[in-house]
Image (cartoon, rainbow, N blue to C red; front, side, top):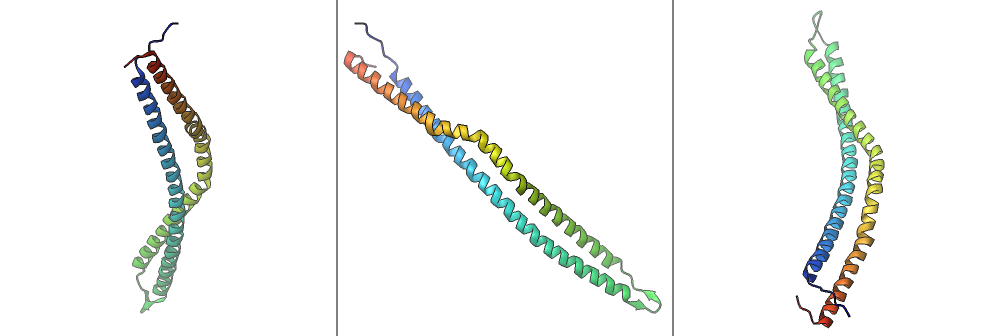
Length: 162
C-alpha cells in the first residue's frame, strides 16, 4: 500500500479561513451597498420635498416683491415717479431664487425617475455575486472543511505528524 505524504494541513486551514473571511467581508460590503442605495433614495426624496418647500417660499417672495414694485410704481412725488430700482433688484433676486429652486426640484425628479433603472442595473450585476457568496462560497468552505477533516484523519491513521 502506498502512502500519501500529507504535510501542510495548516496552509489548507489558513486558506479555508481566508475564504471564510473573504465571504463575510464581501457579504458585509453587499449589505452596506444595499443600505447606501436605500439612503440615497431616501435622500433624493427628502431633497425633492425640501426644494418643493423652497419653491413655495420663493413664489411667496416673488409675489411680495411684485406687489411692492407695483405699489412703488403707483407712488408719485409731484409729477415724478418714485425710484423703483431697489424693488426691481429685489424682484430679480426673488425670481432667480425661484428659478434655482425649480431647477433643483427638476433635477431631483429626474434623478428619482432614473434611480430605479440604475438600481436595477446594479442588482443585475450584484445578484450573481451575492448568489455566489450565499451558495458557492458556503459549499467551498464546507468542501475544504471536509477535506481537512479527511486529511487529518488520514494523517492520524498513518501516524504522521506535522
